[in-house]
Image 1: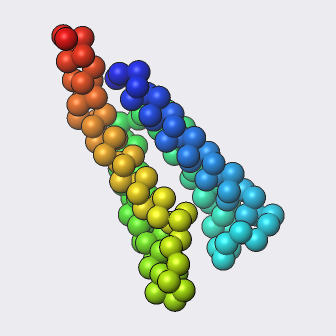
Image 2: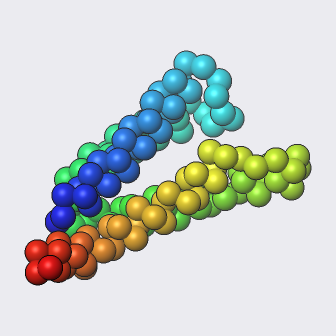
Image 3: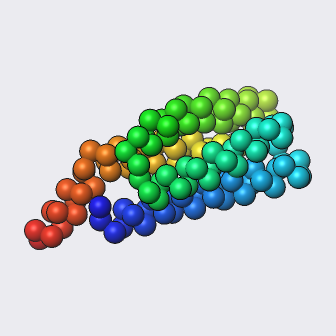
Length: 125
């Protein structure tokens, strides 16, 4: 895999570490309406995802797809609810709704070998 793509996956992993930090703080300070167990669960999930993004396990795409669907449901609902009730944009939910499919596309490309093909075509030029 081309070095730039490895860097991109590291950047994605950093997003998940930041999210884990958010959920960790939410265990001690009320940052959202989620119960403590849910924030703790997402501390663990986000650290796990960050680890897997850096190590790119072949099976991880299935886990990530399930997480992406869950995040669409959760953050999509939050986004729509805030818009419908207060006519405000939930920027955190919007960011999640945009970054999750972006990461999924990169995972698909990595799995299909397209990122390796891009590396090989660069060497031919």
